[in-house]
Image (cartoon, rainbow, N blue to C red):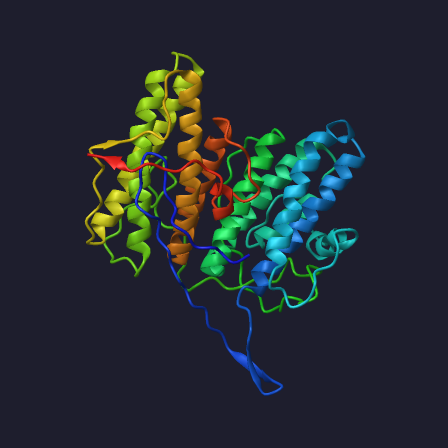
Length: 390
């Protein structure tokens, strides 16, 4: 799925999110006198398809067995997985096999010699998650399989092109939403990047590709993060071209979110919802401050908050406050989707974690679900965002 670039604005008024054009080059070969470029994303896409096939097969097993009574709940989640698979399969050199019968083959190599779903040191996160999904028999295990697959998507972020990284982050967030819907509330953690391997991904489909990996960029390790924020700590190094613009957009979004949650909290009764609003307010303050420090540490001047923000709609009661909170978080998923694509490979996970956090919060506040949180199509029908005042 190619990332469609557009201006992403957050409710309460924001600057446009960054648009980054990244060219990928690779060694080619002659075929019929024409120069053809190898797809550097092929190994990552193939692993993603294999992991999705394993989840689809797991859903089929559960729906046909102990989860039959919850088929009405499980089928929509499975339908989203089919959309994920189609997006990952786009660009593969030949049509990927149908779901029926393909998942077992894709997991056989990963399962062989494995004593269970627990990851082993140095294991390919996708292979581990795929093997675990193959053993699913209950709804609870299905939720855990979704969570492990969400983690595996994050492990492939450094090896992907910017467009594919954004898709991986979006689908990882969707997998996390599925896990929560199925009762698994264990936090998603980003594991180590998939290890490099000499095996070449098969162009015919996911079979045997769970162990095929792409090497991460040299020195690509998870950056230090500000405590409790899931966002990177300040850096004294200059930011690559385009990254500062995306970070300024994220900072502007968080300025607006902090303002918005001030309104949300004032309209909620002193109950669990207000507690949730306070927690979200603190999270957005921490992210705002982190992006500000990162920009300042790189020599850029962080954007200041507007003197005031015009709300997208009147907020007169608790219902309106919850609607505003959902709107804020849904808009932020778009901002962080852009940021995943704009950041250097070794910083993508932090933006993906922010995307997942905002997607989970949006759902918590009642926002309509989407198969691709943080991708443009998700916000195509959102109400127009107003501009800052003052």
